[in-house]
Length: 354
Length: 101
Image (cartoon, rainbow over all chains, first blue to last red):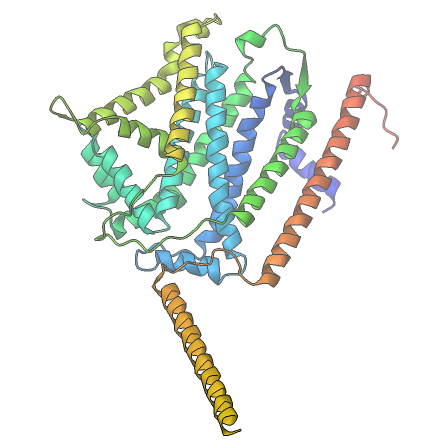
């Protein structure tokens, strides 16, 4: 079948002309914060990279506590290019979560969540939570002593939530403590549950963005210089950014391959000076601010409740910021956005340095 | 004459003893450092350690970046050309344009 006949075959069955026309007529506003429009596409590209490298690693990884650590050592030391794929998966995850945070805080500060884009915010927020859980579950698959201690602390922290804490803790651990059962459970989350919901939510998120079009910040409504066609102009710029990101991921993978620690021993004491991954550092530092006992109550429980309330408020911002919904200037929520961003950045840096 | 000979034998003997002491010290040190490295935490090689492999990897990385830069240059050139035609307004498809065939 020639190319023309194949094209005709598809055209008779599907409205490709409509899709072509839509991409040609999709316009992107050009203004001084326009760079933030590219963070979403960049995150998606890095996620795609994670899917590819993850699929390759899953062929060789053994999700059983007796062999998990050994199988990773074998991937790195014996498999051809195994070290590179593991390193790419590690650095791809770091970059994806980093760009995702920039995307989220950019959306928050430019109030791109305002009416009618609340559902885009909700799907994006759930995707952020999923990505962080992706990071935690992937880190645990290494089954070394640091990952083991980190998961014990994280799931233990979730257990401090009143009413539902106990259920969340035992559901995540697959029992009372972190064991081989937890490894199987985290593997299940990492390779099937989370990818399924990620693909579903990315689909909804992207569809909603196409439906509503790009949000223009209130301050830039009168300053939009011109509108650029998505295809090919913006897509070509996306390609340039993706290529640079790929280069950065590969370079970091070659020069800074992630280490493998000692195999986890559930009965051993946790290693000293243990620190979580960088995207948990702000939570870790916040927990450190609270004393163990506050007026006879468990300090950690109070900290977890306050953090949860902070996250809930963050999630509900599109519904609380009524002024932005009416396209009015909302100084209070600008400051709330700045406080959230600065708090995250400062606490992460403090956690990193100390 | 005999004294000189004895002196020489003594010197040779002393030198031999010194060499023996030095060699045994060297052997002790070598075994000590080998033992230390055995006691130390086993470091897993997460990157190929052979100099030839490393050389190949760095060379491949340099070529990879050359490819990326080349692609970026091509995309930039293509983009500039598209923007030029868009500015001239000649990128729009005309309706009812006659086909040559």
